[in-house]
Image (cartoon, rainbow, N blue to C red; front, side, top):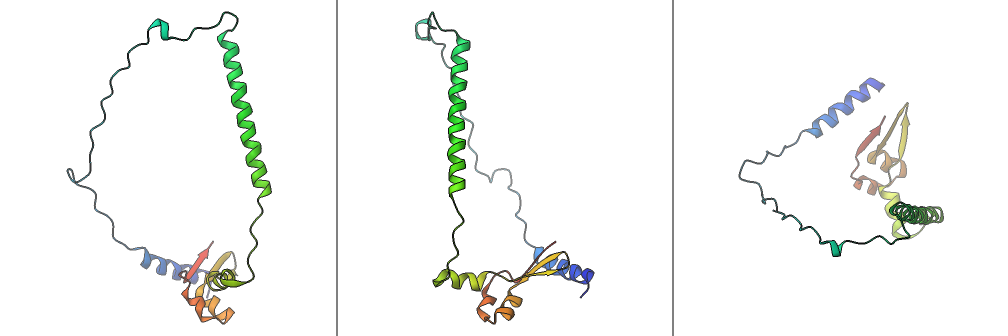
Length: 144
């Protein structure tokens, strides 16, 4: 098959599958509705409840200390995430048991056709000589 024929065949196959039912929009009174909450204004705090600034400290230095503390916490989190990512290695693929069996049945074979990557459960079943590969729900797929 030529490349345009393959593309047309895929458009026809995926176009036939794409047709479906669209949900009807909700009508006026059919939806669930809650009235927005009514918030009351907060009373202003009396003078005695407001925090007082100590004589030796100014607000600018207190703000600088707060931003320094926030930056140090952020740097600590970043370092912890970096260590976690570096120390995590990809899991080894099992060579025994049900993990290997499921991978052999449901992991499709990948083929290159020009610039396209194509996979099919039928081609996988033929190549591996295993009819259980036909249980794979991805009958055909392609990427450009």
